[in-house]
Picture: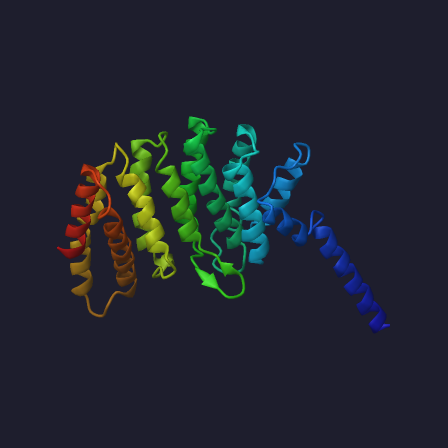
Length: 297
């Protein structure tokens, strides 16, 4: 009796797994990837997009990165087959994903949030090439990105089981492309700088050790290269570092959280300095001088 019951349960479990993925197999999608995701028939496109979006949180990187990210990037950016309305709807859907399970620091739900942010960075880049977001939609995306940067507490980088999680790096990528938009307001630019600084100093961030400082530095570089770069707002950050460092070293015992916050900022600004060294222009020169003063004063 027990053996029969076990077989029934296994059978039902197999049926449930089969019904959970009613779309195409991994082999089918990998074949599409080999062909660089050729444009599907217009009638099939919405369902295929739904399939790919559903895999953004898959713990298997073959599904999450090679199929979902690569496929949606191809159709939304590299060889776009999604029209403006479809891309706008996809942005709204991905912004909603950023809130699924927000605040959790374990489990795998961060994958959907993080890789939604990564795909949003691609859509922001596409919007910079040929605008499809209205001013209101662009502002909403900026607000969603800032809220996600603030509220995401799962900052794990890489592990051998699921590969990259990388929420901080992916959000930095999103801010990098948003910072290149002609629609970005001065207030939003300042909010980006303040939010990145706050993330680096947040207790939940710890010390970033998976390449995130370089990705954040590239987001800051996009801000520096803007014609309306707000030097005063940037200087307000860098000029605060010497006093922050002095206060840290005057305390006994060491304030571990304070050390992590300072180290993150130094790592990002050091990476930014190396990028700025190869950039011409008054804004880059002024920003580099500001960074050097902040790091070494």
